[in-house]
Structures are given as structure tokens and as C-alpha cells.
Length: 200
Picture 1 (cartoon, helix red, strand yellow):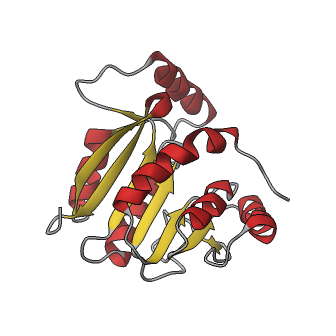
Picture 2 (cartoon, one colour):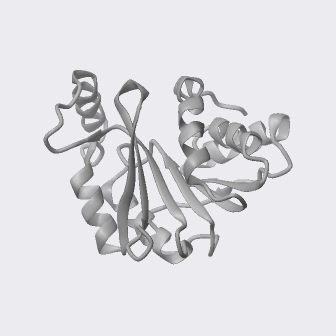
Picture 3 (tube, one colour):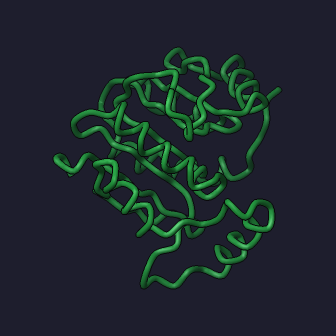
């Protein structure tokens, strides 16, 4: 059954505009934590020269992705993979880029650690790891709406919550990545782009 995430319609154009600058011209893009699958359907159609590989650890999400793919999927949108970012073993061993939207704050920190470790295994050369979502930035005032969102997340699960960009940068460095770009996005979100240290 297709599921819907209202934020998708609000943010997909802005995200796609950044992806157009950061994604390779060809190859496979692994989307980690694809959720409903709405972003996957849209980005696959927006970037027809790329192979779009959605994934998610949740069975209901995988079913939703497949339902969206059946109805609106383009030829370059692959069947979804069951992938838990926190695991050491992923069902894919290479990608031209990794995109992860709204996972880092709605998951335990171990998922982010696994995401960067997986990126270190899969990405070569100048391939990017691209993260989208709300973050806390040192020396930048955090919007009240983000503070309230952070409190809400932590009330649902104390292991969730907005992450500091400093902590994410540190995690990237531990796995061989440097932040190459930062994009301010609508509704107090950011896109953070990481590349291997030799390429950044």
C-alpha cells in the first residue's frame, strides 16, 4: 500500500536542485532510508540517466516503495532493498553516490555511524554522501521550531534527536570523509555533502 509523507511535496524540488549539482552524470545512486518511496519515484524520473536504488529497513516502507514503483516508477527505479544502515553487511557493494533524507535525526546514532561506514565501503573517488535534514550548528542560533522538533523526537525515543553538524563532521573524519558543501534549505533544514578526504 502506498504511504504518503506530506513533507515530500514541499521539499523535493529544493532537494532535487541541489542533487543536480552534486550527483554524478551516470551510475547508481543508493538512497538509504527511502521511507514512503515518494522521493525515490520523483528523483528517478528527474534524473533519467542515473539508476536509482531505494532502500529501507522497514517492511511497510518497502511495500510502500514497491507500490509507488508499480504505479509511477520509471525504468531506472530499481526494486527496493532491505537495508539497515546500522548493520555491517549491506545488500549492495558499490554506488556512485549515497543520498539519505531525514534519517540521521530519526534513528539512533549507531545508524549514522553505520551510514558513514557503509559509505566508506561503497563510495570511490569523488562520489558523494549527501545528507538532508535539520541539524544543530555551532555558533548558529537554532530555530525554535527545530528545538521543539528535537524535544518531540526525544520524547518518542531518547536515542533520537537533532545532531550537531560538528559531531557529524567528526564521524565523517573518522571514516575518511570531509564535508565538501553545505546548503541552506527551506524550513530550517540543511544538505550536507561529504567526499573522501583525498577528493574534498
